[in-house]
Image (cartoon, rainbow, N blue to C red):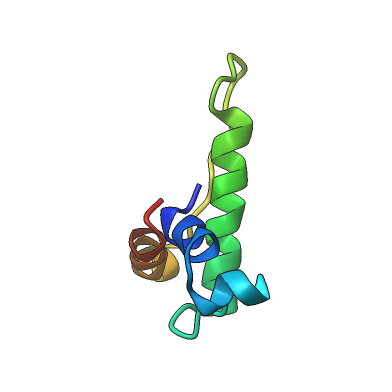
Length: 73
């Protein structure tokens, strides 16, 4: 889903050679919550059932927005 990660792994970046990506500017909890949202989005994308709310704590909302923008989600 993340175009930034896809580009890094499919091009001549060092990350593609190592199959490892490190995001020094994104904290682990923020990256984890972003990945949880990606999973949530894929899981309920075509669901006809009632979709549960994806809870985002207000204090991390801005960081999540910046992370998703950086990852080009």
